[in-house]
Length: 172
Image 1 (cartoon, one colour):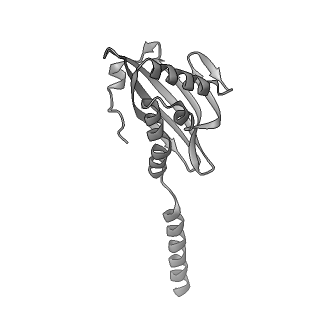
Image 2 (image 1 turned 30 degrees about the vertical axis):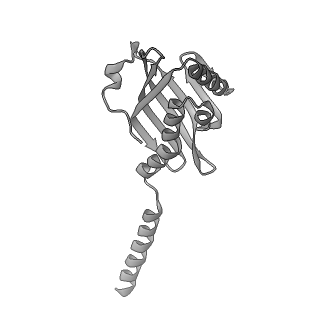
């Protein structure tokens, strides 16, 4: 009887220790928000191509309606586009929200919608909307984007303000 009680106590302590040491998907997603999404949004809005590119891994699969980029040419395009936006006096606001997030200790698959508002020097604002599918990996202790796919249409329907308006943009 005493041996059974001791075995139950040891098993309970062992199981509790394993469970206590694990990080939940929600905790990992908060870490991703701090390491990737807040810096991504800040870099985008500050037109800082270097900071934006720093949220990506060294090797990235980038897919857009224009094709597949496995050579990271999008990173050079980020630098060029943001430099041109600055020269043109554009102000950018990036809002996004997640439709789903699936995360374990080393990988996260995140789907959501974005809205980019670009305001020119005359105060006119244009909007672009889309959906993204992102894969993040924890590399050297830091989360990085390793796959980035986005589109401006779903099932032949142009993504618009109504689609984006289903949820509020995230605040970090």
